[in-house]
Length: 281
Ligand code: AMP
Image (cartoon, rainbow, N blue to C red; front, side):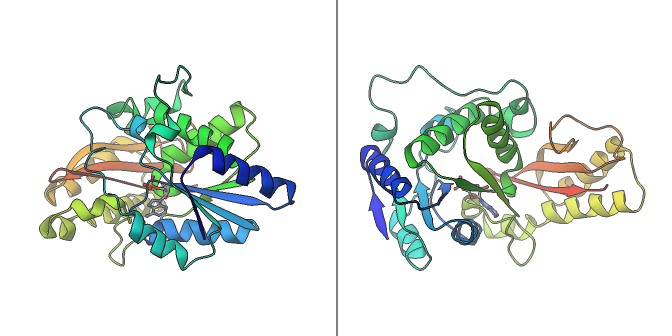
């Protein structure tokens, strides 16, 4: 496994792989890797002859009051975990190499998708994500890129960007990987106190409860949302949003008479966790 620190070197490697007729799958990550990330890497190895994993904590997708500085970083642990898998190149640039001094004038912004769910409280987030992912695509030139459905809105933003801008990369969706008690794996779970960690599975339990209610015939989104808010608050979580939405546009849905995305952001202590399920239909 080769570790690549510079953008120029990664571009050269990508060009060589293309000339050699290899197919390349990219797994973009911010490191602090857990089993969820590693499942994406295994999926990448199934789709392509070469696997590139990027590890880059992208400063432009964090707001000024967010956790960029204290976001967990563990490149040695990451390399150890990736070394046990079929990974050809780990691209781990520093911020100055991705964003040279003098700044950048260009960013990728989407008109509607970021105006929902996480985008409402994190206005910097999706322009930062879309821009860095397009840069990673241009540097690594993958045929396919694997993204996790835990970050459902991110998947939709990337899929839409790729469609709108004719980016020649196939986006592969991977299901959310969970702890045995249902909590979605996340690099941020390590911030949870033991007490909050014990409470946090209520998020997925509640989303599943709503999916079951829909399966039993409940259609009223407002009622579903109220039910969920009550359950999560009773368990000590503070709900930032709870939405029943169209799985493609992410627009709110009033009547769940077709497949819907049920998505939530919940804080336990200072830690913000997100999760979602698709239900109905
Ligand atoms: P991050 O390092 O948080 O930016 O995540 C990198 C990639 O891993 C993204 O595509 C995430 O959606 C994905 N990912 C993170 N956690 C999980 C999980 N629990 N299950 C599946 N994919 C995940």
